[in-house]
Image (tube, rainbow, N blue to C red):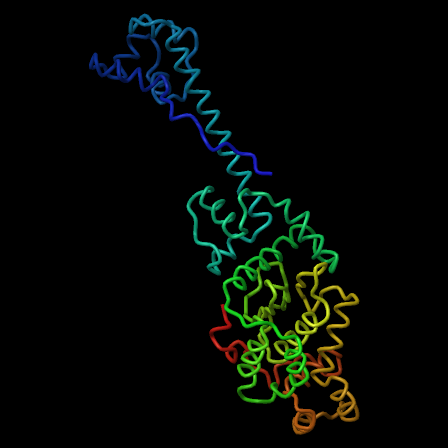
Length: 370
């Protein structure tokens, strides 16, 4: 839980301020006071700047010089030192708050992406953090109790703080989804669209057409770049009654887009429920488990992976562009999907991965790119 004070004493003035007042009344210089008190000019300068604590002996001398009590000067000095110590403690508390936030959120990356505005103080950062999470108090233990166990049981690759970064990305996705207009969700319509997915991959305008159809099914879709140390390709989760699919554009390839979308639709149809309200996917290095294997198998089926393999296996030693295009035409899939499948299976050198590929983000309509 957050532990910090919100009120602190008003600024205290040290003995130096009041000594200068007495000097001005008498029109004394520092040299005059040093001469009167019998101490060095350097010592006087430190006392006037409150850098030198008032000793009992100095207090007695000041009481004689300015016709006050020694206790007066001792009290002024003590009150000032206590105030300074309080100031130091506040700085330590602010450092603790900032370190807590930076441990759990990639703050600089979020500012660069415009997810939170630039801030000039710890209090501004704290306020933006509370707004971002929708919290009343700064309490990251909520993540430890709720979301992190749900996430990390799907992947042993994530320790607490890496998971927190991924969950920060997920929270941003949730915030966006909540403000996105949507139609009523139709699972039947989505299943029908899923069966036709491969045909959209071959059309010049297939991506915007598919996303428009996905929208008609009541599925919210958008692109949200991943945060540092998260290594995410996509996600599926529920926002109210509507499923949400998010693509990060981590690899920006056509084949990556279609496989990620097909994989996330599988999660929507098969795996999202009260026990698994969200799934965050690293499709390259993420841990494989039963639900991930099922989603991979469903995506592979919709993108004709088995048919591609059977058709091209006899030609792998002398595979030509014309053979790839013949396979693509026969099974109605984009050639980049064929290259992606073969390179993933190490049947083709990875240096070929960009054949028939281009920056897929340029093909996704701007309204989906955030």
